[in-house]
Each structure stands twice: as structure tokens, then as C-alpha cells.
Length: 205
Image 1 (cartoon, one colour):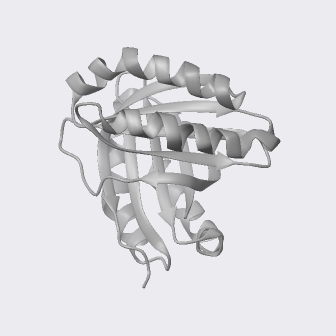
Image 2 (cartoon, rainbow, N blue to C red):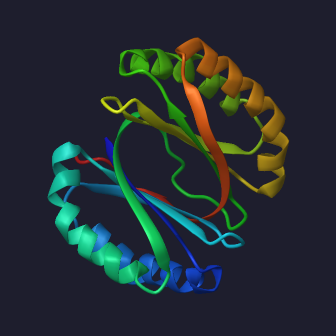
């Protein structure tokens, strides 16, 4: 699958208006798109950050939706976003939770690597990071998204609640260090968000 992410920052006071627009009119537009396979929305209300990820059957479906969703995104975010960044990714590894409770939390880690080391990063995540995450209390699912040509990636992990996210910080820091060393990758940022929306739709038959 392929993923389109949107990362927007703006006035925290206007964030909830954008969330309402995206989860109503924005979501209605998404579910009508061919090849749409679910979405996540994550916010930091204190700072004023909003991130969305939309999942697609394949790169063709992602690209076919681009112009329509660009117009929807601009309209939905117009009252909030001072900055907006849109990226597309290959879902190299995906263990997506179908839903999450109201207290769910999300951790996002951005990494950089030499394009030739992309497969080493996938192997480090699949064989080392993901099994350890699955053993942690409250872990609901996670994904590794890659832009192989640019040497960029994002690791996302969803936790059931604030306490399980907090308890994971130390163990995940150790995992992060070991995996990036093994894959010769560099961590660029680690962020945490509240989960606003999480849904996974079954793939096309």
C-alpha cells in the first residue's frame, strides 16, 4: 500500500475547527475515492500540530486522488494551517489497528538513511523493533513508511492510552538506537500526538 501524509501547523485555538471539518466533510470525500483504505488523524493541541495519513491500495490510486484531495485539504485546513507539508510514502511494513479508544496516543519518528540502506532499515524494523513493540503493554500497531529514493522514512506507533505511551519511552529509545545503528539510519525527530481518528478499511478483493 501507499500513504499520503499531511503535516499542518497553526493557531492551537483554531485546531478543533479543522479537526471537525476533516472528520466530517473531509472523511466523506475520502471514502468515496477509489482505492482508499483508511486514515489516521493525530493532533498536538498544545502546540497546534495536526497530522493525517491516508492509505491507498497502490500508487496509482494515490496519484489519481491527488488533485481532488488537494482541493479538499486546502478547504478543510484554511481556517487553521499556517504551514502545510504533504508527502507520499510506500508502506514498507504495516500492522494497522482497526480502531483505537478515546485515550489513544501516537508516536512519530522521522529517520533518514542512504537509499541503498532502505532494505536494511526494513529488516531492522521487521525482525527487531516490531516483535519488541508487540510485546509491550498497550501497543496497538505500527508502520514503517519509506521514500526510498529520497532516503527518508517515518515510523508510527499507536498506543492504547497515555500511560502505555509513557511506559514505552525508555524501552523504545533503546530499540530506536539499536535499529538505526544496525541500518545506518539517522533519527531526525520524535513527536507524540493524541489520536483523533483511526480506521482501516479492508483491501480490494
